[in-house]
Image 1 (tube, rainbow, N blue to C red):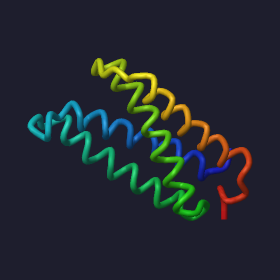
Image 2 (cartoon, one colour; image 1 turned 180 degrees about the vertical axis):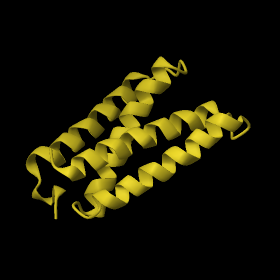
Image 3 (tube, helix red, strand yellow; image 1 turned 180 degrees about the horizontal axis):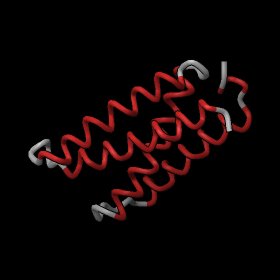
Image 4 (cartoon, rainbow, N blue to C red; image 1 turned 30 degrees about the vertical axis):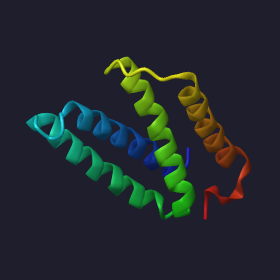
Amino acid sequence: MPPHYIYLFFAVAAETIGTTALQASQQFSKLWPSVICVISYAVAFYLLSLTLKFMPVGVLYAIWSGLGIVLIAAIGYAVFGQKLDWPAVFGIGLILAGILTINLFSSSSTH
């Protein structure tokens, strides 16, 4: 696997951990979830900066944010009991379809 996809995978993971910690921090009123949030976002942005050496910013951001949305929606459902209606599930499906389209069919996904 090319290194930029490894960086991107870990950037998405760090962003997902950070956003989950953000919810758990209860608006930064709990110390440890707040610390985890800040550190996770710092790691995510560092890894994104490494990925930018290989991918254009628009494509990179679309993939990073899209995968983050999908994962956070799943975590919100499983961990925090946040329900999604069918239009939301459909919209998330479209986000996944867009990410797949970029990666499978676009030559813009790398420099």
